[in-house]
Length: 329
Ligand SMILES: NC(=O)c1ccc[n+]([C@@H]2O[C@H](COP(=O)([O-])OP(=O)(O)OC[C@H]3O[C@@H](n4cnc5c(N)ncnc54)[C@H](O)[C@@H]3O)[C@@H](O)[C@H]2O)c1
Ligand SMILES: [Zn+2]
Ligand SMILES: [Zn+2]
Image (tube, rainbow, N blue to C red; front, side):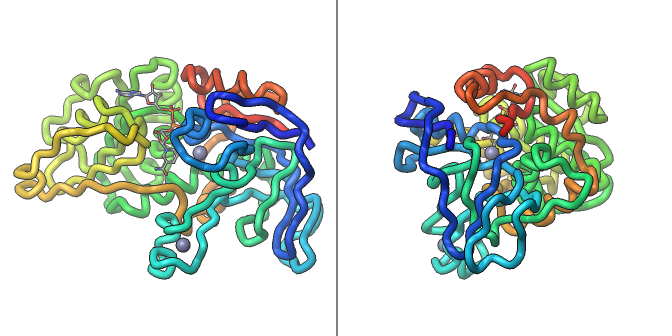
């Protein structure tokens, strides 16, 4: 089959690789759509340390074409979305129900071959069957949505909170959609990119700007979410958390990024600073939210590229043009 292969950091090619063969509890999925995200750029840049070569693609969905000997849950022809998480289930963190922090953490498309290919292998326990009405290619959005759902799992949920989101890329926009569903009083969005802000407006944010200085909320925000990973945004956001509010570090910063923290204010105003990492028992729920129409794929997916154009798709994502960019099967 054909697959995009990151041969070594910085070098990608579309080449012929062996077809996947399923183990007893695996399925082979014909990929209908595979999203590109920041993690793929990190792998491309050599910042994650999987063994190269690697077939990227951890956000994918498609149709089951082969099932392993002991698979009874899905059949050939079933449309599925795949949770890429490969938690070992046995380590200290897994045994404490923190599989996303697994000490032997692996993920499809990060440490083992992923969905940027004609076919991908997945354990059946990682698959959810898509209900009628959900287009398999669109369902590749369930994976990033499941990360956003995990983010909301670590946030307090109160009606009428005021939310401030930094970054209106796919993740910031998903946070906007979820905040609206969680009964936010207002959701304000900051981004430097006017095209991205235009989509936030389309999705009904309460206010938008290139700087939070432009918003009139002297008391600050109950929930501030960083979806940029950028030092300037994180630093700005931390200052704007209201008393009793929570800051969520969702964006992935560079290892070396540092921001000042004011211990007096954290104590005196009972501020929480938290993080959320990937998927933790949130894939199934993201699938249900997706089926219920929590987000409009036509708004979120801005471009589709054929597999042969993987390098171009990645370059466009890196340039910040469009929103979610997908590789179509
Ligand atoms: N925690 C998790 O589980 C998880 C899961 C998926 C993605 N992420 C991370 O979330 C972040 C967002 O993902 P994405 O796919 O939306 O990325 P993206 O690159 O599409 O969007 C980031 C946005 O931030 C904006 N931005 C950059 N600097 C800014 C600044 N100083 N102020 C305001 N806005 C600024 C950019 O213009 C861009 O629109 C990334 O860091 C990604 O790695 C985390
Ligand atoms: Zn991703
Ligand atoms: Zn584990």
